[in-house]
Length: 68
Image (cartoon, rainbow, N blue to C red; front, side, top):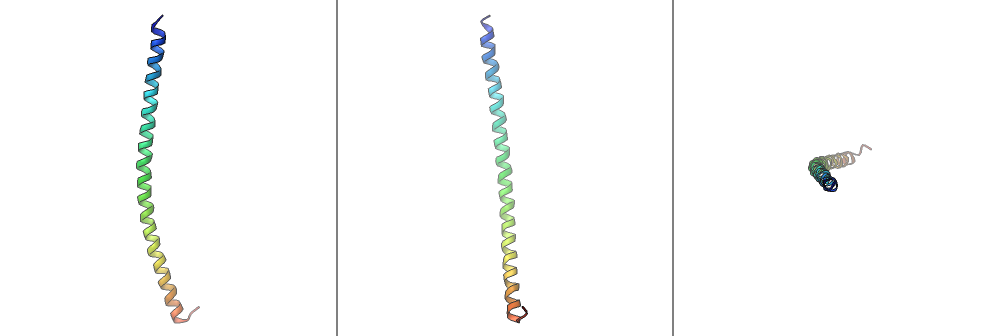
C-alpha cells in the first residue's frame, strides 16, 4: 500500500515534465515564428517607405506641371 502515494507522485512528476516540455516547445516555436514575422514586416515596411517616396515624387512632378 505504500507504493500508491509514491506511484501517484511519480505520475504527477512525469505529467509535470511532459507539460513543461510541451510549453517550452510551444514558446520556442512561437518565438521563431514571431522573429520570422518581424523580418517580413520590416521588409514590407521598407517597401512601403519606397512607395511613399515614389508617391511624393509623383505629387511634386504633378504640382510642377500645374495639373491639379
